Image (cartoon, rainbow, N blue to C red; front, side, top):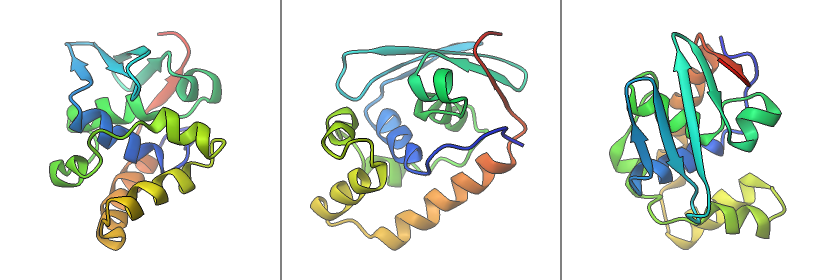
Amino acid sequence: MADKLGPKEKIYEAYSALADERVKLEEDKASVSSSDGKKTYTIRWRDNVYVSDDNATYWQGYPGYPVIAVMMLKGELPYDKEVSELFKDVNWHELNNKYKRDYAKAVKEVINERKLNEDEIDKEVEKVYEQLKEADIIIRRKL
């Protein structure tokens, strides 16, 4: 069971990272580039312990989008490639700044602008969120 859960909207950011092929997975670590390309985060894991230098994971203590994206690629969380592709090329950094970290408003703008089926996407996101809730993972600052 994850110690702490972050906003559900981080799943959308993980989808974008995967759709944009910004996740580079290795044996026991990964790197994920930010949506604006200005930062690269390093994610490491050993068994069920994850560490990452993205702000959410490091400072807030919940799995940020880089950790979620890695868990999806590793098959530890559901990953619907079709849903992921709907969020290709979204600059979340810019949107999150625009909405002063109101992640729900940022997601709403993308869904509205792209005329996406919110109900279908919500079902898939909820599935990921529920599994994340049940995931036996520990978030730490160091391995």
